Image (cartoon, rainbow, N blue to C red; front, side):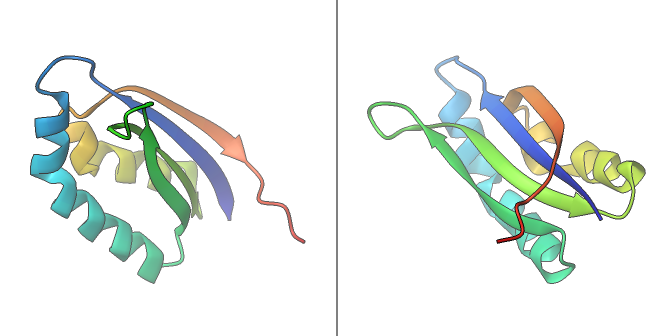
Length: 96
């Protein structure tokens, strides 16, 4: 499987956290489906100094790059305009 690290930053406007919270249940539902299909390895929120969520990091794996792109195209945080800056990089989980 091809592994990826996704580093995504939320918008910095005053409504960013509200957009995140509005689609968060859908994001979690998608993450549970990814986990059930062995695509989700680890993920969580990036926090600022006050503990407010400002982005996300996910390590995912897919059979093909096209599958990863299809997931990203349908990700609620993308479609809900939560994530504004998204970096997707090839990744390799250490086998220890």
